[in-house]
Image 1 (cartoon, rainbow over the protein chains, first blue to last red):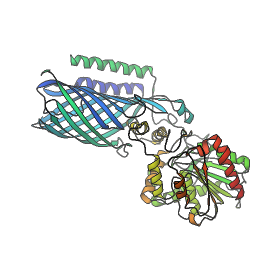
Image 2 (tube, rainbow over the protein chains, first blue to last red):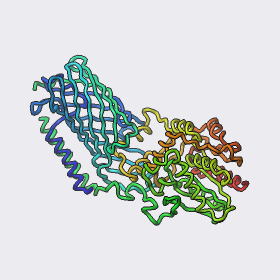
Image 3 (cartoon, rainbow over the protein chains, first blue to last red):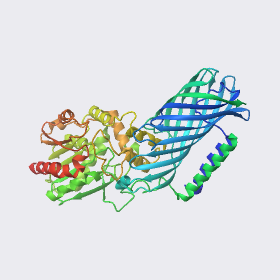
Image 4 (cartoon, chains in turn green, yellow):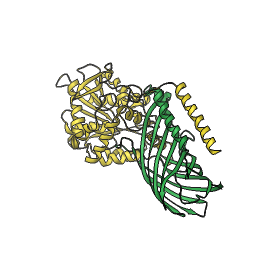
Length: 231
Length: 337
């Protein structure tokens, strides 16, 4: 793909993000705390293409008469080398429809990630689009989710060690990968402000034939909500 | 307020991205040959090759054509013979050294996964042993020309299996740290050698890659496989030796088929009465003395050599070990046959 196509793709994702103005905290109880604006901070631990910890910030408000969360999630895998690999997701989640305790939400995130080993350093931009549908009560919820995490464009920069093998071309590469995922999430509130949740499921590569080396994802997380004004 | 902030930061990111793409130069297609991995012999006619058993193989030979043949089998599945190039030294000692990348591996021609799967339990017989037989036939110029097999790791397993099938064809067999000769042993060895710590960088280096690169074609899968072949502290202190290109499809297919059909590389080797030269390394933590004894017990007559100060690949790739231990042992062994 040419540079123009690359920009068009990125622009499309961005425009979508900016116009929908949604989200983040990948897990939210749509039946709790909807009467007020909230800041949400949280942390998670689990498996997501490695053993990772993440930190979450979200801002819950209303838009188009629907609750939305915008925010950011930074995750870091474990390992001896700190900060050589990381992922930042920024975007939003909006409750699309629902009746009673039932709700369907859409999540759109722009993903920036970095990876480094002895042979290559990668910096990639992508998107993560997901739908979550479930049963949300004031004190607890259970839901199913399905999504697609796409690596839209990735910059590869190879090391001298790699060049001993082969002088692979440094540069930007389009559409280097993508993974579908589907799973479940559930959580409960302890008091008005604390949310404990679990999330887990399976991943498949975009060709639907191969699986990632770690084909499962799982998260245990905790969110704390802070009052930020009436809606 | 928030809306403004989002819009502003979004626009800024967009501008930065556009600038990065414009100034950071053009984008490259993943599927363009040679961008990420070297071309294979069917794509690059300047590489040494031969059409053998229905596949264009990357292969070359050194030494006088009618000297005793030493046919080398590389590890993997899916690796290449680049790290076995020290074997060329044997040509200076009166041997005809044959190096080749097995089908689907290194710089040899690629085939689809179905090519391997449809062979069923005969995949190794038809696509590996028959290929090796054809390689020998290709390079053998006279009927009484001796044939020695020299296999490292996976190559040692294949050399053993071939010798069990054609005991009268093989005048001498050298194996270097074959993981195991029964599939149960292979699985044990793989499990032990790849048992990364839960919170280790090594584990993360392998798993996190899947977010960036997913299966598409041979080029991308081979490239990705190559990126995970860096260091393995379990099997030795040395960095993985330079390689040209890995064969991801053949790797996955043969490992899957091996597991499904429990391929037994020791079949028939019990009737091979020639002494077998068996190397293993001191610093491969998985290849203990007891494991070497266990694996080599399949050979009725054998001589074990523990190479000091090196790991799995260092038996060949460590210059000191090669010149002071491995090479002299090989020369003595081949000349005694």
